[in-house]
Image 1 (spheres, one colour):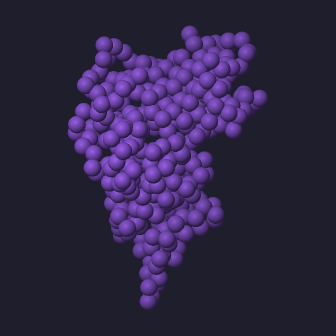
Image 2 (image 1 turned 45 degrees about the vertical axis):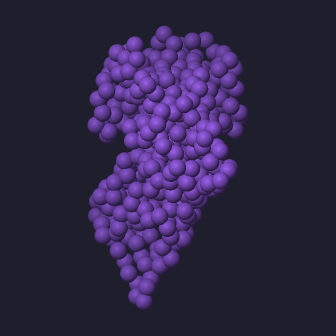
Image 3 (image 1 turned 90 degrees about the vertical axis):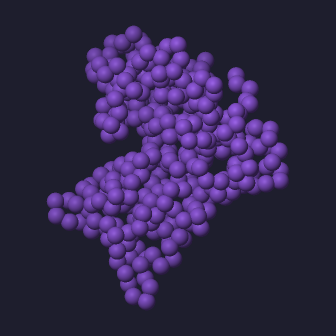
Length: 379
């Protein structure tokens, strides 16, 4: 899992440190940078998959708008990231500088070390050369976008278990920050991944294993006891159609095109949770979902054997967290006097910690005035 991320010069994230747990809930005022943090993490994942041009195009972004416009060096085109992750082989640190100039769109300088910033060097890119481990530098004679690891074949990394694990982990980041019910309703051809807006859902479910499909149905039945099955049907030219089968006095089959927004959102979330090896990102997780259903969803995300990061404006979400989970997982985002997004564990704030001895996590959130300046000792 990803333990921490350092981000410099990505939009309002001029110089931000973010600590993560297996389940992380980001809170803060509108404009504090919650969605931007999810975008930055998704960007990090895309660097390990390459094809940054396609990624920006899908979001309708212009590269000149991504580097921060704040600070003395606001005109620079380099965005810096440092990711500390825990893999089977131990802790690993990936440090990179990404050049947003359209002739580059890649990490012109990056390194991977084991253990810490001063640990053994596993990979390095600088001055147009790269090396793996202690091997001599080699000239980079191929074009790529993002991290060089996105283009190196796994076979070329034999004997470098940490690099293979890092590549798989970071590449597994899946952002659903643009969920849109109209896109979830659409028929789709075969896809390996559901899109950030939910596009391709029917084909994604069609491609699930029997075990994954059963987990999806069981999760939905906890919310909708009348649900009996989630079916997909192959149409002409490879199109897939999604249907929901319910049992009342009679059997009722409803096409996704006519299904309510909340059910489609839950189907998408549960389908992704059923897939192994994912780091999942959800923006405003409470949107379109009945509060009575939310408790089960939150518990499902906490118990999932994968890392989940969500944003919310709802105190109710926090009330479904135990004090122990809330203390480590609820992160407050805020902007300092310079407009830079910063982060801190919400319940590390003395006033919030004091209130937590008497109130539930959501009640503390509701009883806190986030409009007031946050007095935090910044390092």
